[in-house]
Image (tube, rainbow, N blue to C red; front, side):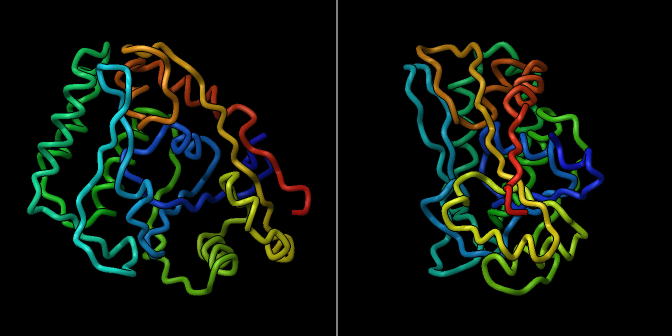
Length: 246
């Protein structure tokens, strides 16, 4: 059940990822506000700067963004290394993998435009791609904002609660991996309902061998076109599980 059915304002706080997987867009179906957590430390090995696409030999490859090295910087401060022609390289890889897909011509134009622009900050590039893919994959009016715009302080759980307070949220949606470390008691004390998000990745027709899940969402969009929306909704069905302690 979606928390909004209980007249709650639901908030998800997620990192701005590069070419995110389809489960990322499931959040848009359940959240009123999506806060892109850009004022936390950047992790060079994370999905913040890379993702996977399927290639014609049936395997997958990583698209990784080159960044200017600066140890300990926050995501919002990460600069793309434009000495490398990553725009041409990444679009060439995407085109090579999906030009023959049934809906590539229909959906590729807006994304291709991104790769013909100049980008300096990683977060700006990722945010734009997220907006484009969300427009195509989810019928949603979810508000999207950057955490750095909220000027919120605190550490760990306290900071999450302060972000929720800043946007008037009373329900928080978290990925399942956080179960192992997230302290639920402060949410209960603050009167915030906590929901775990467990997206059930659907399978769909995918060329070049066996199905590979958890690729960038461009895979489902280029292969399934308008049906991709229904597949995101299918994976989102019963995805929210309320924490019993909140």
